[in-house]
Image 1 (cartoon, one colour):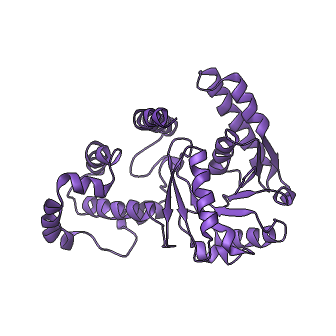
Image 2 (cartoon, one colour; image 1 turned 180 degrees about the vertical axis):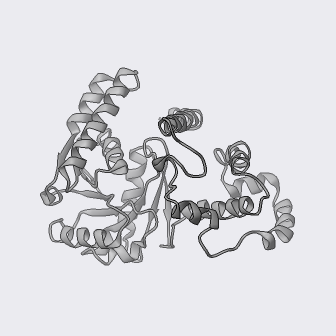
Image 3 (cartoon, rainbow, N blue to C red; image 1 turned 90 degrees about the vertical axis):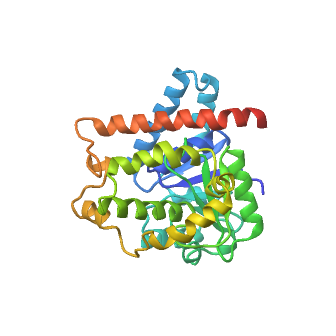
Length: 317
């Protein structure tokens, strides 16, 4: 499938970042949002990001100009009438998505591929709101999208193989690491792994086995250090499946298997402590610490990305 005109629906943090990424590889990228204010904020953010890249030598002035020229912004759904690919990034609210998809289906061409960036909503459920659901598929990005390489591609029961292949190839074109998820399970793959870790981590903290900082240090300087380079099954092969078998025989029965929201997570939520965005979560982020924490995170992500993937990219190209 030859994809030329790209439309991003939703100009929030993820949508605007995705538009910037697509505009690096395509000449016709449209960012849609029904609110003019949100669209203007996204435009300003993208232009600021590109200016920074150009001024720091991470992008040539010519490429920066080409990227910005490839982008257009609109509040009109007419932009969906003649496009090849749509990336939906609306709020994680099924009613909002249903309304959008039903309106979209009356406008969009039958050949247009429609993707959703939902973090865990059922692809089969959402595809029921779309005409010709064989062209509908999940394309789950990770925040921050300009730094995290992974894209989960989630097939619904009616998704055609041609559409799945097209999205896989598209992900490679924009230099991402796509993984095909063959079944539509809640949370897909990454979030299931992430929340299995969170459940065990918070259980250990709640029981006083280890502190919050201790948990994060174990992950950052132990497991996470490995997992930046190897997946869990690769780690098992290196450690020896016999060793992992014997440990599993006594450890699995002692791991947390609660089906409820972890107590500590619930307490923070009910107190309005949402993390960086509210300046308090498991840690404090007051007096400018939130901005510092984000900058530190992005700097570390960038260093890891360059260390692990830039050399690989050079070998590939």
